[in-house]
Image (cartoon, rainbow over all chains, first blue to last red; front, side, top):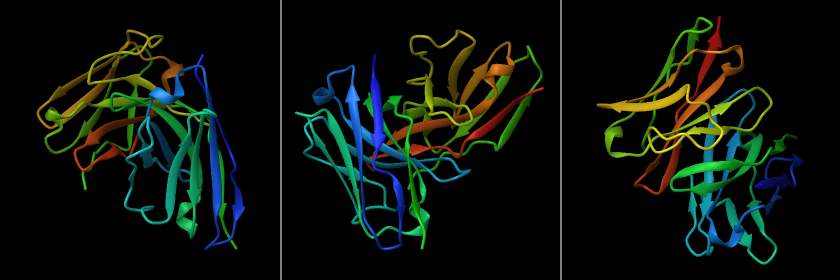
Length: 117
Length: 107
């Protein structure tokens, strides 16, 4: 079955950096686009970024463009999110999710990022 | 940027029908997807492309669209349906947009 397992979250100071990972299994990772979606405490879902199966074109929400970078290693079935210049408002649970015709059909359990001094 | 509008909360009596709306400009031209999120859990896709159910989702869940509004309908509501529900579309600005979410309470 499809499994997505995020890791790399933690507490970081404002202006700091963090790198999230998402280990995928149970499907052909190299054939599918992948997303990061976040959810601030007590808030709704916010799409963050998308990378297609080949990793060539990448798309970002305005709130993170220029600070976050999505990437993937198809040889290791792993998705990444490099987060720089972190702000308090980036505090959230970060989910990776599999793309499926415009929908997100499988989600991981999330990894928590807290930006605080 | 494109926006989707959902009511903050919807209440339904046990066994009755709940309807959760999602409004957006020209939503009729977009594929609408719906997610269920229970407390402490990751979202689960319950409806894709307006009115299709993924494998394992009960037939009680259905989707529809009319004009500038999409609707998630939950028939014969159960206590286990209590959750937050989100609509989502892909916008031509190359972004995936979520509605603000609706908290469903089963009375």
